[in-house]
Image: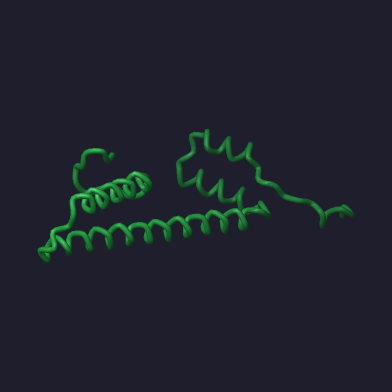
Amino acid sequence: MCRFSSQILIKMDIKSIKQIVNSDLPIDYQEKAILSILANDKKVIPYIMEILENERRQNKELLLDTNMELSRALITLNADAKGKKAMKEQTDFVVGEIKKHYLKWKDYIKCCFNVQGLP
């Protein structure tokens, strides 16, 4: 037994992963093979936890932003519906903010209708 065996660091084998990805193996075999390689990396769990934390933070931000824009739209529409006649500037501001929201989160959400200035 090697006297340094407890100090051996197993690193992610990128070359093997690249070979698997570029192979003609069926996707399910590729996935299992890649997961097998990742399972040998001591750092994979912290990396995955970091990825999950970033995703959770981004999802929370998206929900908070969406809630703000829906709330703003509701207040504006509600004021107009009650006959208080929302000012044109208020309406234009809310529309602009909603468009900014859709553009900011374009990779995650999109307007259900065809609106000029939105993807």
